[in-house]
Amino acid sequence: MIDHISIPTEAGSFDAIAAGPEDGRPVLLLHGFPEAAVEWEHQVATLGVLGYRAVAPDQRGYSPDVRPEAATDYSIDHLVGDVVTITEQLGWKQFDLVGHDWGGAVAWWTADAHPERLRSLTVVSTPHPAALANAMKTDEDQHLRTRYMTEWRQTRVTERRMLENDGRALREMFERRLPPSKVDDYVQRLSEPGALTAALNWYRAGRPGGKIGKISVPTLYVWSTEDVSFGSVAALDTANWVTGPYRFEMLEDVTHWAPEEAPEAVTTLIVEHLDAR
Figure 1: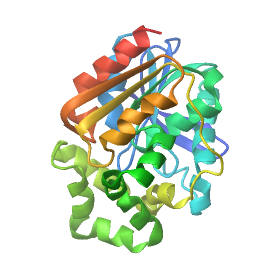
Figure 2 (figure 1 turned 30 degrees about the vertical axis):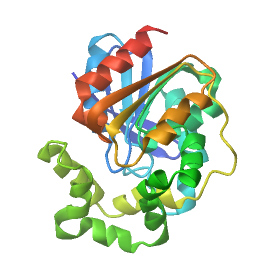
Figure 3 (figure 1 turned 30 degrees about the horizontal axis):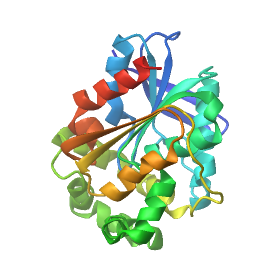
Figure 4 (figure 1 turned 90 degrees about the vertical axis):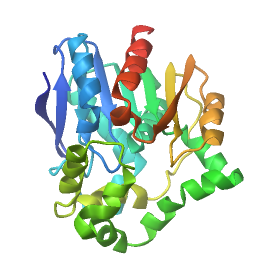
């Protein structure tokens, strides 16, 4: 039901999972940290059965063939550029974009930079970047929730701490909400030489040079009440940063890992959003 494909680009070949007919309506799904494309396997498989062409790539640093060493090679411009390049290589002139965690941030920035390419936008967990930035400045709760981002930027000792004791720190991030086999897979992937540094370089690349604007693309934003990273202030303020049709959905008693913790609920919301467009 799910195929493993390779998408060649000038930066290297991106590994990806895919499902659905080649001529189906295209949907690109972007994963977050510390996961990989397989976080979307339930959504990809379901979309494929419904006739969509769903593709979820292992993004820059997660695909072994696209793993530059410099932190500057993981700037938001490069990450958005990868989305454009991947979809062009797939022959997609327009597509639906879905993102979670860091993949959600890339999705927001892509919608801002290339609205004409997107039929719709779905983001899980991650608020609009401007809403998040405002909350980090004005809301003490959000400031504390995202303090880890600053810590991970400052030192490469982070890699050792995350991987020691069989990746205990990485495992604890998932709050016992994912199957152990899935967590084992993520830890194994990030234990490969250079893989965890590449993933953390997303945090170390520096802040985007420009400012993100309001989003005109039809948008679905899904936030979970038990999300440890993103609080309600930024989540609720996101509505003020979308000028196009907007839908906000709240998942009760679900953590940050919604696509895998509540796959049926997330998939249903995505499909409803796509069907409405």
